[in-house]
Each structure stands twice: as C-alpha cells, then as structure tokens.
Image 1: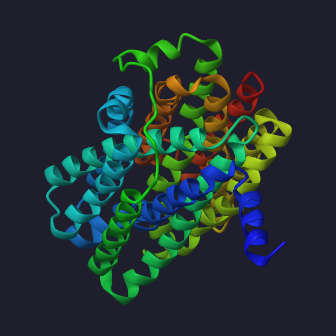
Image 2 (image 1 turned 30 degrees about the horizontal axis):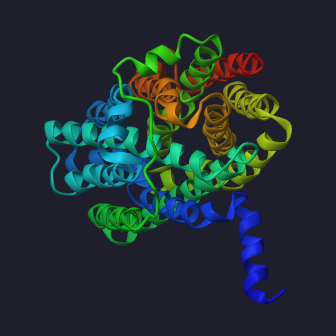
Length: 395
C-alpha cells in the first residue's frame, strides 16, 4: 500500500464515516471550528467586555446573552421552515453570519437595544446552525457511526472554542477589548467562507409545520430526552453567567480565560472519545457517568468552599457539556428517519436553550438568594444527580 492510500485509510478510521462522507464531514467540522474559535468563544467574555467597555450593568450583559438562548428556543420551533426555505447548507451559512453579528455590533455600540436585537439574530443563527449541522452529520454517517461522526463535529467545536477562549484572553491584554472582539468577528467570517464551499446535496425532508417539534414530544422517550437537556444545559448557563462574574471578582478579568479554559479544554478529548464510547457501550452509562462527575465536583466545591475548586468544576462541566449533545445527536439518528430529523432534533434541543438562558438570567439572583456561589453550586449539583436518574430511563 502506498503512502497516499495509507493516509486515506487512517483518515477514514479517524472520522469513522463512509469514504464518500469524509470530505464533507471534515469541511463541515472546519466551519464549526472557525465559528466557535471566533464568536463562540466570545460568549465567555460578553459580560465582562460590556461592563469594561461600555460600563453596562451585569443585568444588561446577562440579558443580552440570555436573549441568544431564549431566541434560539423560539426559532427552533420554526426549524423545519428554516431547513425548507434555505436548505441545510444555506441554513449553515446564515447561521455562521448570525454568529458574527453580535460581536460586530458590540464592537461599535453599547446601546442595550441594539445589543438585544443583535443577540436575537444570534439566537436565530444558533437554531439554524445546530439543526442543519446535526442533520448533515447524521446524513453523512450511518447506523452505528453516529456517535463517532458527531464526536468529530463537536471536537472541532470544542478545539475552536478552547483556542478562542485562550486567545481572546491574551488579546484582551495585548490589543485591548476592542481588538479582541474585532479578531473574533474576522475568524467567524472565515468560517462562513468555509461553509460556502461545503459540498452537500440537499435532502428531502418532511413538510414543515409549526407544531412538528411539539408533536414529537408526544413520545415519553422524547419527553425524557427533553427534560435531561433542560436540566443539563443549565451547566453551560452556569459557566457563562455565574462563573465569569465570580472569577472576575475573585481573580480579576484577565483570569476569566485561564480559569474557565479547563471547561473548554476538557471537552476536546471528551468529544471524540465520548462519541466512540456511546457507539460501543450505549448512551445511558456514558451520559450517567458524565452527570455524576459534574454533580460530585459541584457538591465538593460547595462543601469545601475553596475558590480554587472553580477550576476543577469547570473541567467536570466541560466533560458533561461535551458528551450530552453527542448523546442527543446519536439519539436523533437512531430514533428518527432522515426526513424527520430536523423537527425531532428541534423538539429536544429547544429545551437545551431554555435551560441555558434561564441559568444565565437567574444566576445573579441565585447568588444573592443562596448566599453566594457555594449555595448555587450545591443546587446545580443536585440537578445533575436528577439527570443521572433520568438517563437510565432514556431508550
């Protein structure tokens, strides 16, 4: 076997999809990588950036970020229309452009109304990007390969976001906040260019209907999956809402990057490794173990009350946040035929955005009501224990 053939064989083994889908999956993963290297990583800095640059209150910053997730919730109910009108590739391109919109507006304006409108556009983009990207991955893979193929996509996201958080943290010190945001916009637009070049044939989908996502919830298993995502996604909201403010208060703004980077770095090996484990041993034990690790770390931090344990919790939350969406993608691949995948994915994923948005909005109130971050962590630790139990009901 010559070197070129050997390399093709190794690459095919790495992404674990049929040869015809390898090029498409790698390019799709590259588009996600760049989008989350730029605007996706900027999420971690939104609150501190708006406060430092425009002297906006924490409530305004949290409200803008929460709008992204609550708008994504609303737009996921229209996900079948997005796919029908734009096609999977068109929705992907529009989604990357929408991700670039918020940091572009934040670069030039601190007007709260403009920021909320830009956040709403970003929310639509999130619904379009993730719905199109997930169904494209499942189309490119096959039964028994969904975990590994989804792991490839999500690993690109996780590597991009981890590099982005680290890079943007350094750029804040070197070039200032505005230079950091300008870089995030530029990198995201390169991701749009990659999405434009993606080779993908449009698929026939079920006719779009407004209630499609809610009809899918008539299944008890779908409702269980939705509840798991509702509770588990609050972990990312916790990181974006409470973590950033607590770390900035304890260590300073520059420390937000290095403390929370454990979340993003931990997701990298968990993505591909978690997908392969799901294909091999099933969703329930893998998801249950991830939830248990997050719960234990948060409860330990609450009991020991040591601020340095924030970094440990960030790592555990990163593993959890890595594996759960991959488990969701494999569940959609196994439960839905290709024509129904957009609205089956939307029926479950829309609750993920609710959990993240509510955690961001309620984070500051929880800090005040529960006497600080220790009580807040104990609450979320308990929620993730509930997720462990729910996971074993998932079929």
